Length: 268
Ligand SMILES: NC(=O)c1ccc[n+]([C@@H]2O[C@H](COP(=O)([O-])OP(=O)(O)OC[C@H]3O[C@@H](n4cnc5c(N)ncnc54)[C@H](OP(=O)(O)O)[C@@H]3O)[C@@H](O)[C@H]2O)c1
Image (cartoon, rainbow, N blue to C red; front, side):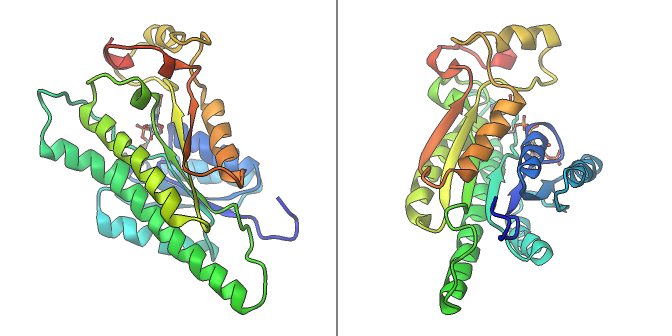
């Protein structure tokens, strides 16, 4: 980061716990100011904010239900009111509920598409509007816009888009739609905002797996290990800071997408 510029501001959704928290802390350690989004995990969000502060990073927590369009539309203005600006969004929050081709229905589809796809698109749209206004204001003042090339959206995807199975049907559909949206947004929001996907492999366990089962599935990859939280957070930071990346996805999965799995890891 240039010492003459104010530190850039990033909103990380779902940053109270798990991968979102790791991403928030990696960005805080790298000199970003971090807006920590959460829905229910308020105490964990406050802990993430405190841990960012330990890294000398200005940070604050913001709640929003990403399935609620009005709440999503209100989120970036709240972040801008607090920090005075926003430079990037990491869409990490995700609804991950099981359904199948047999149990699929509009309710499950709607729930996943709202929080995992629609919210990410609305946040990208709002970031673009903010950055465009900032660039215009800088041009009027005859100044260079701060952090040009750094303004970006990173969408957390999933290696299973490249290695599909029919488990978690609506979740997978919502991530496939987000991947397609990433291509369209990269075209529509350039040159002000870049859009990059980061697709982890199996990284963190869930209540569906014992620790031994998780470790065994984590080893199921050409490299003998899938991704760690540090791998994923490092890829997100790289995507945010590399000024030439847009309209593409970094698969961070030990090569799991090169293999064929008939079932989701949690249901093998
Ligand atoms: N974990 C993995 O191994 C893995 C593998 C492949 C891809 N990914 C992707 O990486 C990202 C992070 O994974 P993760 O395992 O850390 O995610 P997660 O634990 O499943 O979810 C992260 C957070 O999303 C928030 N969230 C869910 N629905 C929401 C809604 N309607 N409104 C607002 N927030 C909502 C929750 O926040 P609150 O707790 O505050 O309610 C939750 O803590 C996801 O996009 C996931 O698809 C993860």
